[in-house]
Length: 203
Image (cartoon, rainbow, N blue to C red; front, top):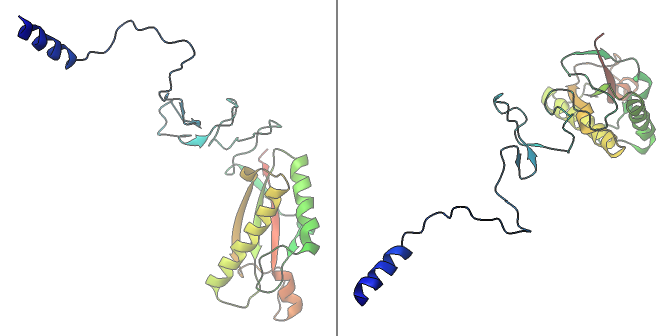
């Protein structure tokens, strides 16, 4: 009889079942991941092939991340980059000049970037494209990379001035689009530049 009791005790211990009707202990919370909030990431749950998946969620459900309308400031809906009109004249006077073979923004040129940042803050629905340009010396490949570094350098400075990263794009034209024609330093100095193109919503 004692042997039977031991056998039943061992058998019961090896067949643990999921508890039913268990009361949650006060002060504890369910930490299992939810489909709409994984590790602080806003995840799409509407079945549109993962749009928004893994995008940081900033706590504002009205912001449509990935839709082209990202506007954390709440100052107005911004245009989709594919639905804008380019205006290169608005900030033409703020074109940034660079030294030969350099990509850092000179202290004498910072006021131009600051003026562009102030303009964007006053026009929250506009975007900005920063173009990087070079003079004619050097290979196409080298100048394309140098133009990219120049555009990115301006963009980074804009971000330090409080411009939202989603509002500024960059492009490098290398030496393909000179501002002036010429083969001397007077021409070269004008072609080593970073130009601003304002992107407005189409009417």
